[in-house]
Image (cartoon, rainbow, N blue to C red; front, top):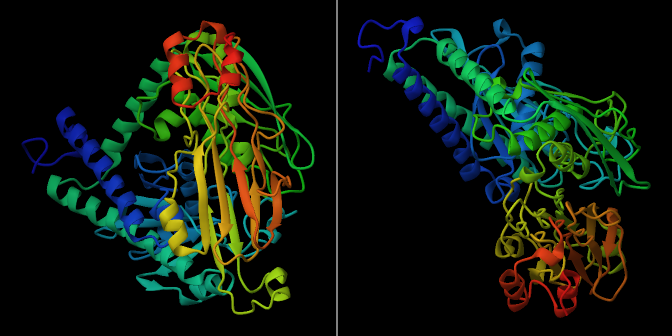
Length: 562
């Protein structure tokens, strides 16, 4: 197929031809992501979709990303390819090479995320790079949770390196990885799934370029990036110009954390400055700058330019600054394992600024950061040894759990919804199949949504035990226990989160803790804030909430009704 109806010429591609190539690129990266889902071993990728996939120009600019994936992975990965090219310039790459890292500062924020880059060569010329990421079930170290004081405590650190050299696997690299993780088969399978998904992207793009008789992506890439940037700037100019500030306090680990932002909208773009935010801490809740950029820009894009393609062109309109040494720009070797706790609060911080510009267009705060339940066990725990369970098999699982989102303009908040992360939950049947845990309860948490003209989304109640009445280790990494999601425009706060044992003992929201043998873990996730004064809520909507047991009779009193 010749897109011009004449001899191929990259400088004269028609508008229709460029659109065809753009649509094909989206199809290619989505197939890349679906390949990863279908071949990955870990449930985080296979079931929850905790991944990203994209295609880049040879100069490292992302031109297309898969719809499937999470903002923390996609938007961080958009910058990570630059680091790969600094370590391995194009003239050092060869056909059949594949590169790998889990460097939090050059990847997507913590050691559990593997980022892989594969160059595509045609006639010995590099024409594109495919990148993908996923979250592995284990990376050694202390295990999941924010207990580490430095990155060295958190697991195996892989600098940017060659994983495959000219088509030959670097077996030593794989052997080192497998020797340092608790689930070597799963981690090996996930790494090879990354290889496969990038390879599918390369094959599909090579086939497209053959079919359309083009030799370079430069023309279509520049077209995509230029139009995306222009569309994003046009979206910004639909908002009022000005500067607004917002501040949020969250639980932190040993002491509360302050997140402070100053957002400026102008005809030139969007600038967000986090000066005044708390400093980094000696626990694994710190955020690297790339992850701060990722969720800050995502918060903006939820409200401004949401229909503009997400690539280097549109992302370039947003500038994010955070003081080095702050909780949002933590220096190496700070601990960052549970960086999502703080990083996923940033869209709400951005919303607080933008609400002052357009009060009618911005939701209230939500639970925001994921309430993942990370459980492990096995014969190496001292509690197992004390019971003589030396042959107890090891296990490590993550249940992606969520709270409620904030109420939206003219709509209630979404209950038990993964915002801003976007991951799916892993079904309880699968978790019970691959591990010895049992889910006894998983239901909406009544009255957890903040009252308002539009109600905040509900959290959930989850109750879990060990099938064999053995002890388990909990890697708690949760927030919104001390400082719940705030309501807006007269709406009330959402309910704070709670965690404890069925016997009544309260547990900490962060840190490794033992669930004793025979006990049940009870997790109550936070609700979203309400929007507008509660007494203005529609009576039919209130009656439906009562009928559906989303609020109780006592909860209805918050709306001015008995």
